[in-house]
Image 1 (cartoon, helix red, strand yellow):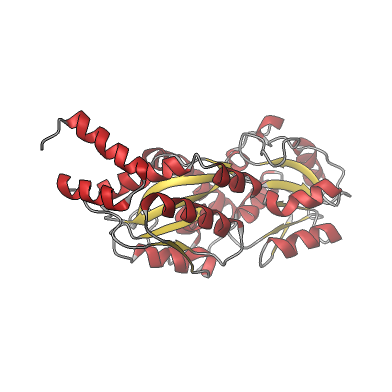
Image 2 (cartoon, one colour):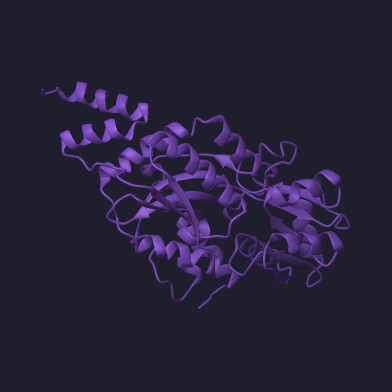
Amino acid sequence: MRFSQPNRRGLLQGMAALGGSSLLGTALAQTGKVAWPSKAIRLVVPFNAGGATDIIARTVGEALSKRIGQPVVVDNKGGAAGILGTDAVAKAPADGHTLLLSLSTSMLINQFLYTKLPYSPQKDFVLLTQVAAAPVTLVVHPSVPANNMKELLAYAKANKSKLSYGSWGTGSYAHLAGAYMSKTMDADMVHVAYKGEAPMIQELIGGQLQLCFSSALNTKPFIDSGRVKAIGVTGKQRMDILPKVPSIFEQGVQDDAYSIFGWVAMGAPAGTPKDVIDQLYAHLREIAKDPKLIERIVAAGFTPMMNSPQEFQQNYQRDMPIWKQLVETAGARLD
């Protein structure tokens, strides 16, 4: 039986909505498209289990599995700032059965930070979707006499060489943004890198640091208790998890360095068939409506996105020169 183009498209969309992999696979075989998925999906997270990225990956994996009728197995391959796991996906078969869920760090920033990178973020991946925006908070020790961004910048400028800022690692946003602030204010602040956000926040609470950028997931309890003081959040909008904390942008400090934000996103190996990408994104678009997924993204201090591959590509190209400039300003280069 032959279908006109509109009717055939409508039938396939209806089958996709049912989430039945056997029906969808049969229909795709009849239309000459790739029968996907034909086995379990491996969703690689290039960071250790238990973090916010891992939590989102498992929530996405659970919802996606229900729609496609195949298991989605989250594979945590942490190490080397996300390089190991990201490289594993870059070298995986391009059949839509190995996917990446990572941060802007490994998918964008590392190409400017590392002199030697085993993969090319722009050549070795298909950009699927930005699952969530990941703005961060800017917090200070209560002893710092500043209550907003303009006061903090003035204080840093007036106290040259007297302030320290923390980060969760060289090349992280916390490092790059702090270095940008130091240079633009001629503040000569000292950068202190930690192995993770938790020890950095404890040092801030203890007064060993004066300020740092950090995720809302880590800072919210201490903001609420008054042990640290919130100056603002990056990006252009307030966070749902911290509705009373204004963005740095709305405070009138609209430098790209503070308006930009990281993200949690998904990718696939370069060469993955377009019709597989289209099918996958159709499912992702539907699971983005899941209240459970939305709740977990917001609770982690992120903002739900789940945009299209085309929108992701546009955002990527827009943000890339900003991240490159931030790395150059910080003078951060790693082997």
